[in-house]
Image (cartoon, rainbow, N blue to C red; front, side, top):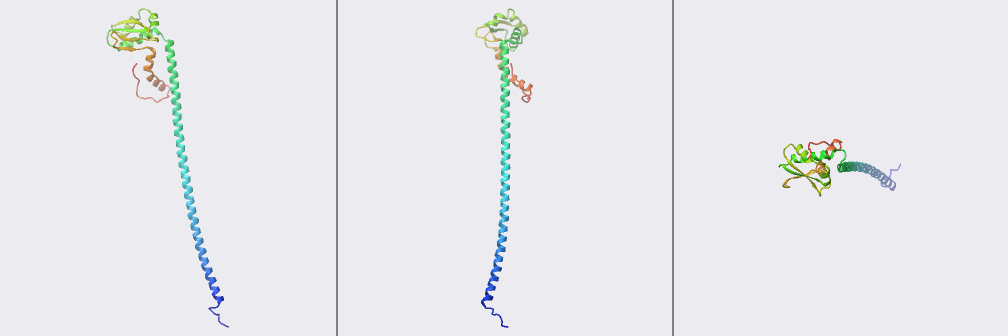
Amino acid sequence: MAASNPNSPEILRNEILADARRESEGILARARQDAAALLARAAAEAEQIRRENREQTQAEAARRRELILTTVAVEAGRLRSARLESWLQAIQQATRQKLQARDGFDYRETVIALAAEALSRMTGDAFVVKLSQADGGTLGNGLAEEIGRHVGRSLTVTIAAEPTINDGGPIIQDRNGTQIWDNRFLSRLERLWPELRRQIAVATLLVPRSGTSGGGA
């Protein structure tokens, strides 16, 4: 049997083909490994991006929710304050109308009490109690004496009708005009209103109670 020629073209071709197959298999294996690694890395990056997007979306949603809640709270507070202010203004206007109409109270006794209250806080012994011309003519004699008795000390009180006064209540001044106390109804209401509105709001539980109290009359 004749020995094969190791240098024959057929053997060389087969060896080359075998080497090529081995090399291609190695290349394919490495390619598959590289592809798998690339796919795993891409999947990990995609998951990271998805997670970051979800976190960003959740953070943005939380931020917008807080913003909406804050806006709603501010708007609710604004509407509540506006309604409270409107309600208090209505009360003030109704009180002004009641005072101007002299409705629901003894007008003469109220004038005496307001004048006596002012005089009790003023120094001196001679005073003028000024009223509107209409009140000066209708409240009757003896008003000065009644005011003096309410004060509780010896005073000289003179009643004067003042043309410039056109609303209810007295203006009291001393003889020299250095002390003047405007205790007319509407003037007194203006002075008392800041504390009155606070007390009304507290009494109706519209504002929290505080330790502060109001000013003078």
